[in-house]
Image 1 (cartoon, rainbow, N blue to C red):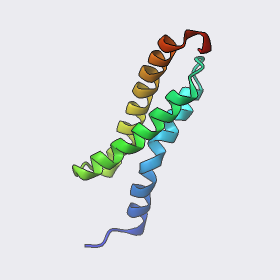
Image 2: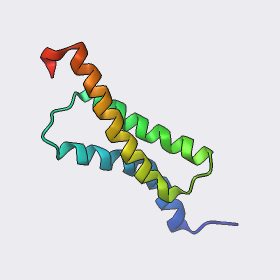
Image 3: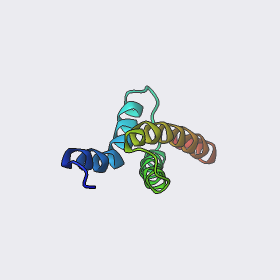
Length: 89
């Protein structure tokens, strides 16, 4: 059957909303993150949505999962980058 246009619009928007919400939440923290770690988190959060869609998870979960993954990836990547070049943190 055909989906309602609103549902299709929300599903499409959920591909990027999780990553953007994750970046917004991270910007409210006191920590200064490397730009590369923020970009890595954003890309990872969008990529996980494609994986979740492929496995058939409901689109309403995309934002929660992608925000969570974004925050985890940014913190982990930032920790690695700070160990590689501690003077630029």
